[in-house]
Length: 162
Length: 371
Image (tube, rainbow over the protein chains, first blue to last red):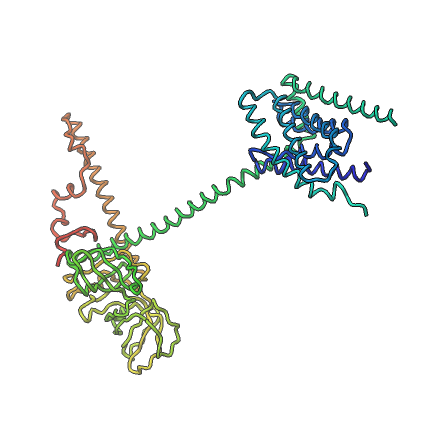
């Protein structure tokens, strides 16, 4: 990956992190859009699995710093999601919007499952409701937002050759 | 090449395992250690993001509370408007009370209800009728001056025309009696060389002798001629002269003392009160309708002050009586512990109120008010 492409990817990543800490709390939805997962997924498909794991770990640690009671859970979930996305990136080489949406959906859902499991705060019905109801809804919102952002950021992430 | 790929894969695996181990370790760290690491991150790397998040949350709260704030502002504004309306109404009622005190007898107070029918905007339904002595052609007044005249009477209500009604006419004069004429509503400027633009809610005083020139601001009152309106009720003030084709008399444009929109509570002068009697004393020593209204309002205030003083005197007398009883050691009867009402305290002392027509509230029923 050239320096220009790396800089553009970093720019897009930073933009998504900013959105996560501005748009998300402003909207305040019960099923929030997770811009951090989108950022990690978009980065992961452009780097090797080890780097993707590291990006996920750092991003998760930043997110965990605001939730000390679940410290480490986000880092673990982001590491897993980032590394897996990087290994599976061949699947998503196809330039298909629906496939990308599915990619974001699965990524966010997997993140939530790992997160709530590692957090060990929810049990029984509450855990099931979170994993089977709220997480898929949040994943769907994230998928829609991810596809929209991907279409908007395409000129930045994949510039056309002059 | 294959070695490089294998090496890369090994590095990836090592990184992944290392990250996973560190993350798992973070989940099982003691709470104080976790808090220390998280706090360190929040104070350094994450600080700008925390600030952004706080501002976003604050923005959301402001956005959500916008409707509630708007609603609160609306209610406060509405209450403010209602308060202003209540203050105005209170002022008018006090002025009416003052007018009642000045008139002393021969009148009834009434509420003037606006008739909703089209074309009836210059009439009002009064809440008094023939049962209290109201008859057709009895004048209707307000603290500011003349309102109109009763046209039809039912037992419990009557209909009055305002001065703005096309059928209204009143014999009038200047307050210094230097000029006489007839006051009509100023309906149109047709056929006249108008210097002052037409205005529906103005009056005109016609038939003023050519030798009698009136200056703008001159107070016009009823003259008492014709037997409908007693002399001395303010009608309005002269605005200026109207040019007419009649060369032997002058016509003046008059600004009315009472605006039709302000007519809500009025006083109906009963026939007995107006027979040959001037009401100049009521609006006496007033050089304009405005100052007359202020004088009347002040009279209303004096009634309230007198009532307050009476109640204070009665309370003091009761307290003194109780103190005297307790000193003498006699038990105080329950009735004596109640503060004596002003009227009961006054009557045994033989005050002049019992020997002369007492000033009364305009809305109080009084047999003497009947014709």
